[in-house]
Length: 302
Image (cartoon, rainbow, N blue to C red; front, side, top):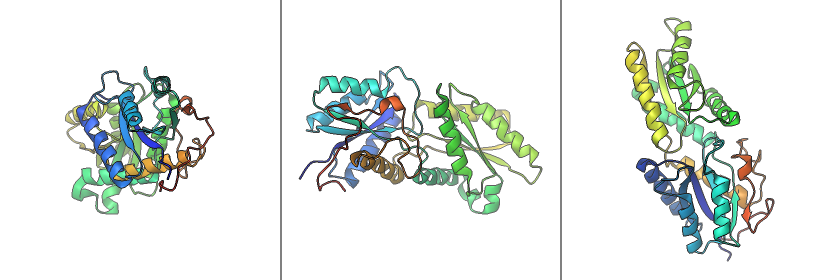
């Protein structure tokens, strides 16, 4: 029976120990749910990460993995970073001749992740989110990392629209922690202005919802920015939600992306939820495989 390709979860740059612990938890969850697939994880884009992606790749090779499927743990493409995913994979191919590395699509605004975001909203509101009337008076500010790549920022806007559709919230606006406008205070200003135009019976509170899969420095910054704005606007109710984290929905989406690569499905536009794949320059397979060759497995892949 052929051993299936290994699964490598590639998180984007954090030195935060909480982010590393969450990635460890996600790896453990996937390994427990899919014991037939070797799983590891690490971060790219941050030189001082305690969990570097290079080390995770080397560890899988030591465990005997000749083929690795890389799933970027991103909600949207990152745009340019000093030590981007293609660079890391090129180094790995040079260190390990014959190793096959193929990159799949990031989780993106998959329907399962939108459901997880909705759960985080309800948790932030507590008992105040139970009825349609409660939701109708709630504005949501979906906050992404921010990028110099306009396509990456547009993905946050797309997720906001998908989150708003059919869920009954008064509106879902977007903001970014850095590198893109509006920033968190400006996004909260817009939410407040929209609530004011609705009149006395309109939205009466705002939930700041991080559009991040794992905790880390950017999430802490956005909460600090939101808390500062709330202190300056004591008449507005502002609630802070948590990130999705290592939840079963995220594990399921990652495995869906993994299986698409193994089956040789197109990485761009091939996902059933229409998710945009990660940065196009990260698409080729590195090492011995061609870009279009499926990473076939034996009967052990489920």
